[in-house]
Length: 54
Image (cartoon, rainbow, N blue to C red; front, side, top):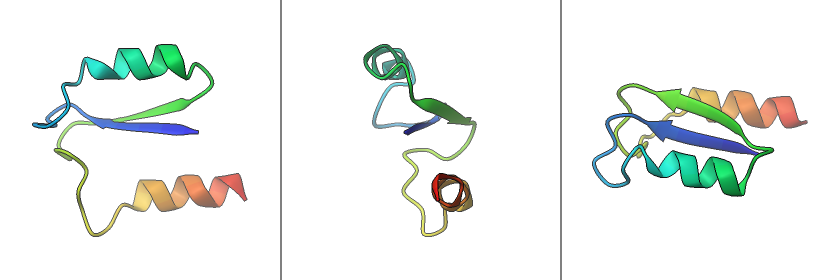
């Protein structure tokens, strides 16, 4: 399981990540600097992580 967060997300405060990490301690965290709410057409890191699961 992966948690993806961007420090410049205008929708969900970055501090919310701590709550998710506490609830899902087994999850891997990927932090980005400038992806906003990660609403993008291409997300190569997600594809990379899915391939790793296979």
